[in-house]
Image (cartoon, rainbow, N blue to C red; front, side, top):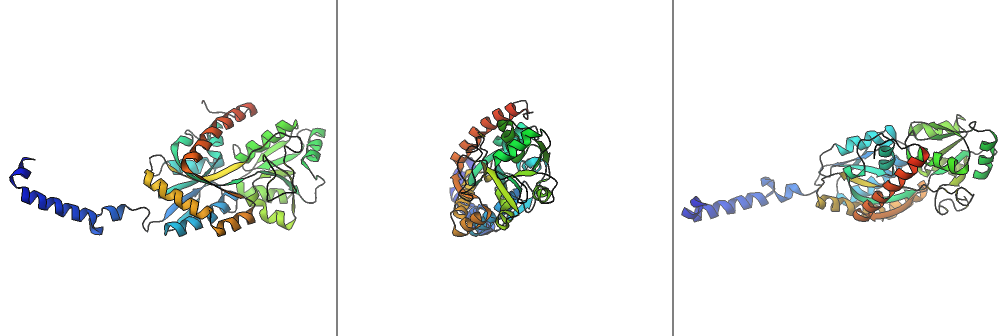
Length: 330
């Protein structure tokens, strides 16, 4: 401070020079700190190529890329019902260049013991869509409804096999909840997510509980039959398919998907990403792709999205406890 007083003119000149450098592109100031610039953004997807998580992530990434004027690149990091991808994403620098395509699985993986951290390791960016798990059989099987499948399961407890996307996954949890509520005993068979539908088509299991994105082509071609939608109301993509609730089994297990970033990501960056998700979800291209995959666009901004995650985390923990699947200490 003393030297500034003795040479105010020099100090002022230095300050002006420093300010000019800070504001110039070469000085690395505001221009360099703008997000995202030309640097690509990686979106971690928790399940393999061809799954519903993968297909829906790619349609969102395409729309976000257009809005952000840089590439949003989908990187599949499957394993552990989502745990592998969550661990990777949570460990990345919180600068917006690594995001995760998250879902209710953040709670199921934590409460079943696959993760040592919960949803609070991430900043919610925005919800993009919802999906209703489906109970599906091959089209050449005799069952035409959930009721008929349950009757058969009760006739021969433990004989019918039902595939899901892995122990602790949302589809596993949904399947267990469905048949417990129905009072029927089936054998749950966990697969790597990409193997679930091929296992059904190959006759290795009697049915699967799976998300519609991975089943869309087979539903359209008539190779599989949907017995029930695990939703609170009929899915507009399957208006003729009765919900489990309508068929006397009081279970709904809608799955949301959205974008989250590592804890500590700056709010300005979160806001920029949130706007990109909104632009993508509200686009005509996204709606057309969602219709093809039998998923429902459902944009929700970061703050209310975070409230939904927190509320559902408590509910999922309680439900997993009741099903005997909860393993974490919390």
